[in-house]
Length: 293
Image 1 (cartoon, rainbow, N blue to C red):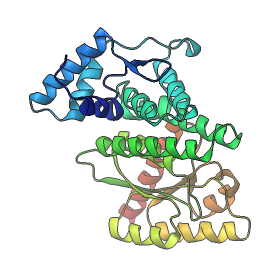
Image 2: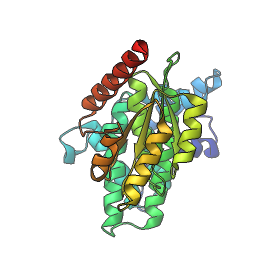
Image 3: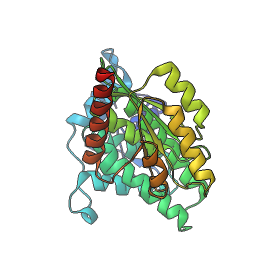
């Protein structure tokens, strides 16, 4: 009917959420007239030379919005977050890809993370801690969402910004998906975000700072080491950051506050606008000291 092979049709559905057909109890796809129209639009864009990912974005943006879920008061972002979590609970990789791709059409990258993808990640993590989903389900969701966040971060990088932020997790820290969200926020403030990732020891930070001369180093820690190792580790990170402003966030940051602040670092407050104010104030203060010297 559409002149599109079944293999291509399933690839578009899996990768881009175009279309997202209903399914029978036996998992057979049921294509509506609206689905057929979306496929034909997608086909025409691709045949005209447009990349499939861009064609899918165009198709989704011009399609009628899906009905809002009743459980979230009509909030499209909350609805998307719920559907992502539901797909993880069903252990449905195709459905998870579809819902994540649909969420990408809701607005700016930072808003998508803060109101849809971030809450979904947090809820999936809570479900895992509560024993309501398996490690395999949590890993599947992390892999899909992590790849999506990395893609968003690449797209969000400012073109001509001279400012840079390095983002990394403390040594022994494995959970880093939140760093991509922090990176998106820094991009919106005009910083180029460079993610070093999990388990980044002070020596690696020192090398990166020496090579890249970032304006800011942002670190995350969920479980701080016990004293005296905590103070020694914070001192090592402070030394590694050299003249760059540095800030620590995450669930374990508050426990390290005395050590961080004693070395001139910042502890990220819950309010994002306060983070920006702290960073800009610190950078301005450092610039003034350099001018005086």
